[in-house]
Image 1 (spheres, one colour):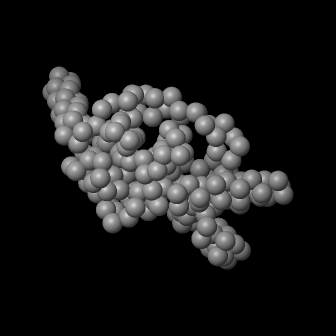
Image 2 (cartoon, rainbow, N blue to C red):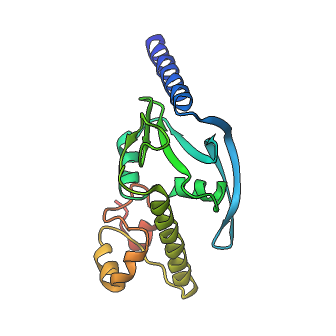
Length: 201
């Protein structure tokens, strides 16, 4: 499997040089790699580890490294589902406005971000939107969704979202869902809760 090994090494080298070039060309310095983050979310202690944290004067950026999945990451940013990046930004410092966030895809050496303010070479998914406004909107939805779920659990109810129940859930909760993280209409590929509604195939 020597050809595969050589191809893998070449991909890693290309990705490394691409990332280093983007950091240098955009005036960033590395604040930390594998940075331990601690904080709270709705009075719950949260610990995380950010792959790459950068600093440029008063600006900060957090970059999550992924091996592949460029299209998926683009869609996550476009649909405002990049909640992991939003959590990282909040844990770095909730008081710092407009912390830049991005995914770096190792397989292709591609940087994917909401705009080009941090990395001019990045694939900008939603360049006309304010990073800070979007992050605050997602953070608000994360909190509202958490509170909604916890209230259900306190009442002894569990809403099981599947392709078969999503219409009923939307009909039951109506406009209330607009303030929450959007539910998917399709079944999750790995969903333990399917056993609760006898949907094991």
